[in-house]
Image 1: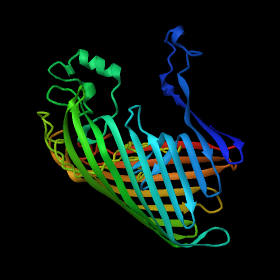
Image 2: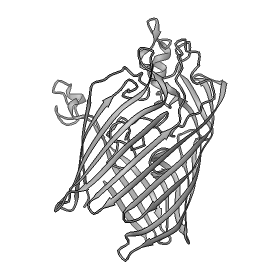
Image 3: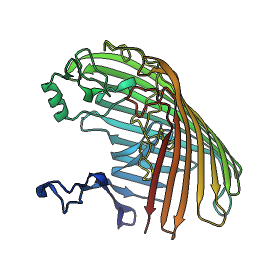
Image 4: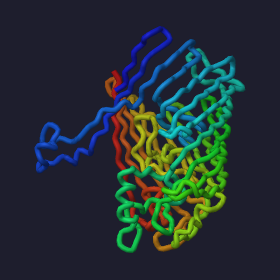
Length: 430
């Protein structure tokens, strides 16, 4: 639920509330009365402030936000960063130019900040009396810098979820082992020979790139190219004084070509992000990460929404987040999309067919190198009801290949069984 209060003609206070609820199947009639919220069928639900910010609109061409709010920067498709952070952002149109600038806090560490700047220029932009595009071509240049400390290193050199202090204390008490092996709860993390997790500081990390978009009533072309440069300082989680510095240099790109006619749209899409070949490191000597990496990494993996199932792990958009949320690192995607407006209804059908591969091979559970991830088939039905509600139904299928895994930190098992994915969303505005 989103609340907006106008305190001045140019100033408003915005609050977006969301629930964080346990799964409905976790109700339990056998639980003790002291732990029940209201009844045996209850489960915990927390109300949180998803966004909370002050907005200033000094003129129709400027939007300034201060506080916790959503940003979608870089390529604006989730390949760099799309999320909710606390800070300052401003988007403004100055003549024919349009710029966006901001600074956001990434974590509680003093030096963890994200800075971004972009400049958008329309070389030509013709619209009719209804505001529909006749012919438009624009280019946007962007540059993003960020620094982050104490990032856990996951498998395949991708950032992993942060371990809580209580979890680390529990692991320390057991020397990070379970019998003669490393603790199984650390299976998603890169470990050293003592089974201790490896962390890194993202230092002098920078993204810069270009977005291009050409649009007519019939044809459309979108393209972007992004470069990721910087350094990682690796260390054992409890020994920050001994660091190994390594350089990262990678790139990503995307291309979309569409053709439209009344009620229909056809699109070809391709995306690639550089990666490194995965090396065998059974002795945990750091073979995979103690080298210069020619890879592209998002700031926060999972925000790219190129497919409904394999990607689409979550973004500020409320109708996202039902997919597996894989990183785009070391991945290439090619596919076809189709949109059909069903006649005499408010329903829309969207179809997508994609092939996903690793650019450099990865090791599966048998120690065999594989590149093919799989084939994805997406089907989405969108229906507008009573003028206030939108219903989205996803029915997707995925045929996995040897390089498929359910997340970025799990070793591929070589699974070949078809996977089916169903999701539904109801968005209501009043």
